[in-house]
Image 1: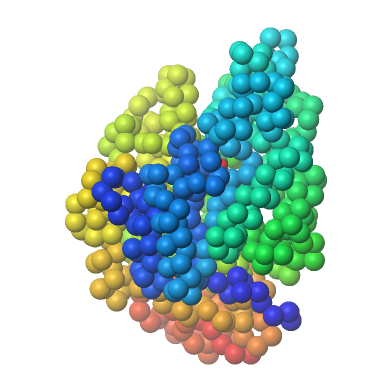
Image 2: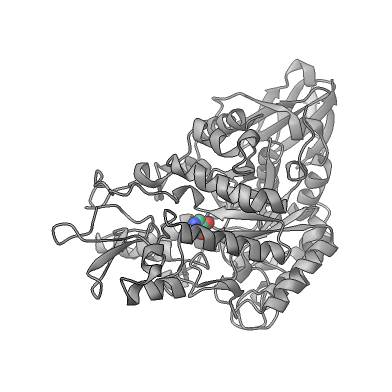
Length: 558
Ligand code: NOJ
């Protein structure tokens, strides 16, 4: 078996910097805030920090609308603060992955401003402009954040494409000058010491240039056009360019955010032999508790569906690539609120989620606050929400005549703001996140669920995460093993086995408030306990008597 690459036995901690820690009292998190908390992060036992963007940005989409790729937004600090942060990360033996938003820029980026001011400017071709069709948009493509994907510019009598918000014009990667700019930016940050990149929306780089009209969505004139821009064969070429010109020669690792993936494309991106990407973050893996791709049409968790999706991806990537394992991120509501039982078994079910996810094959990605069992903030007013996606969806819902109460429930349940509320550091004012007025209100439960209290409690979610990351490290079954899901159709149990040449483990998780009996496979009857979320499991005659939300993992040599 080929020796694992360093990132295959690593764990990554994701920071959403605006909500992590505010060092200067202006109400928003900043880079010095991250630096001050590096010991905390290192104490988790993670190897890598990935931060969401902190570049100059008007913040139309949480920083994923970059107006200057080479400078830190003053709200986050200065280049010196960045250098201090990365030095602090390296000093503690960790690495740093940068978020690179290459599909689009902000409309306030100098390139776009130049493109708008003059059709003959070379920057005009940095973006995707088209003439209207019959007095309307060039096509009926929907933006991912609602409405049309085209915005009219009267001065040019042209429309520009924005797959995301209208303040996020898409770059034209068919223009070699754009690719050259991107390579320069990636080298610029590599020179400053970054160890890898998380590539945002990177499978959307190539759009079919004739922009065909698509089937409208119900109740809309616009339609999902992903078949015309997601995972088109041409993106492989772009990935190879990034790999050959930057990542490979500089020894950088990549993880790519890639939605709407099938098996063949996933292997095409991440198979090591192809020299494209290191690991994939199949973003739509968590669409298992909603109607199709509409996150605001929630459905209860369908555990068999989740197991099927996980088992599928484990199989697809085993020996053909690598997966980022995640249960939450800045684009999701809190995992505990969504998949666990925050009312009756908050800590136990938060631990179960980690046990269920992080013994799979792949690199654990831990989203800030999930290691505490943070919940959605459950705001009492629509005015508390900040995210462009939430606000656009709300406005569209209200325009359809839906009630504010309905949308308050929906946004509390499903909006990205759920995962973006300030990190709960302590029981002090504003959860210890800021001495000023926080840009978003913290979770009301911060007096009970916070890092300071959990640090001292050996049974806390935080200390469970620390133990889990420690015991998982270096295990051959975890790094190399194949994965077999058992009890596929059981609506409450998630059980899977992992096996390498010399070792096997089993992860048993009761996703319910019910007591359940589970007969262990015979080959595990004499296995040892690796970790559990409520003391020693009760196992008699090979049968586990599972308590509500109980989870454990057993291991044995072959
Ligand atoms: C994915 C990012 O994770 C999300 O936050 C952002 O809105 C879109 N890509 C557009 O950049």
